[in-house]
Image (cartoon, rainbow, N blue to C red):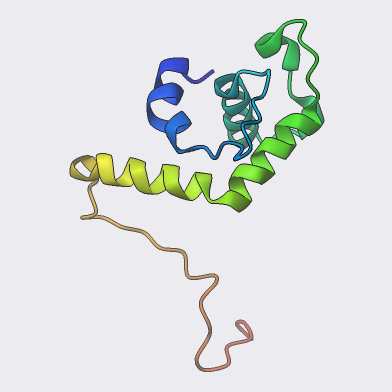
Amino acid sequence: MESKNKIEKWISPHLSRGKRAFTTKFDLTQVMCLIIKRLKTGCQWRELRLKEYFGREKISWQSINYCFNKWSKGGSFRRIWIHLLYSNKRALDLSSLQLDGSYTRSRMGGEGLVI
């Protein structure tokens, strides 16, 4: 589980909140912990162990998925990524960079290797 202090310091300030003073009864830090766990492990949304994070509180995996979709579409993850890159730019070592070219266009019409 990611450190709650790290999430509160680096991630929480960049998450979009409701504009109409709607407040959630769930701890958004815990929600983000579950989202990070889901992204790390690749498990299904419904397989998240909610009781480990929320105890007896009533929350469903759909609520966690809703927050993920809302933050994805609202640009929260992009803001977090840019902030983390900017604040840690001195630690980045770009002397060795590897790129995947599988999404680049083939200029010569390469359909694949024919033997």
